[in-house]
Image 1 (spheres, rainbow, N blue to C red):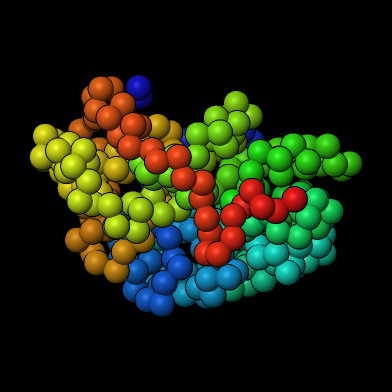
Image 2: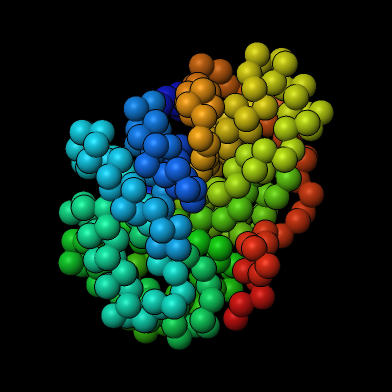
Length: 279
C-alpha cells in the first residue's frame, strides 16, 4: 500500500483528485468548526443544501485566507430540486452561498423521486460540469439499482464519481461497496465513526491499546486503508487534531481483518427511510 499522509488524495473516475479525509458540516456551529478544521490541515469540506451551512462554510473559507484552489469543497442537492433546471440552479445557489467560482464535487443527496427525476437532475449536473461550475458529480445514499437505471437513460454521459453512504465497521454495506469499486465509483463515508456510539467495542479498544491510538483513530485508519474516504465532524479542536494524526502508523492486515469481521450486516437507514426502498 502506498504511504499515506495528510495531503494524500484518491483519484476519481473522471481524473480529478479527492483528499482522503473530509470534514462534515451538518452542525449549528459550522463557522467555528470549519475554521478549526481548516487551521488543522483539513482541505476537504463536505456540506449540503439541506444542512443550511453553505454560507457559514463560505465565510470560514474566506476568513481562513486559504485559496479555493487549495481546498476541496463538496455539496449536495436535495430532492425537491430534482429537475434539470433545478439542479443547475442549485449549483449556482451553492456557488453564491459559498462565494466560490466552482465546486469540486456536487452530489444528488438521495435517490428519492424515481428514475425520471433522478435522470433529469443528473442531466442538470452534467450541464453544470460542462459550464465549468462543477468539476465532479456524484450521488449519495444510492443502491445498485439506482446506478443501473441511470446508466440506461438517454443523455447520460458521465458516470457518478462518488457515492456517499453510511459506512463504519458495523455497517459496511458490502454489496454496494463492491459494486462501486467495480465501476470505479469512490465511496465516501458519513457516520464514519458510528456517531461515537461504538467506542466501547472490545476489538477497536484492543487495537487502540496495541497501536497507542484512540478508538476513533483506529477506525479512521482502517477506513483510509480500505480506500474509503471518511467524513468526520466534531466541535472539539483536540478531536480535529486527533483525526489528522493517523498517518504515523499502519494497521497490520490481520488487524484490518479483525475490524472487517465487526460488520453486522445492517443496511443503512437515513433518518426514517431506507435507500433500497426507493425505486
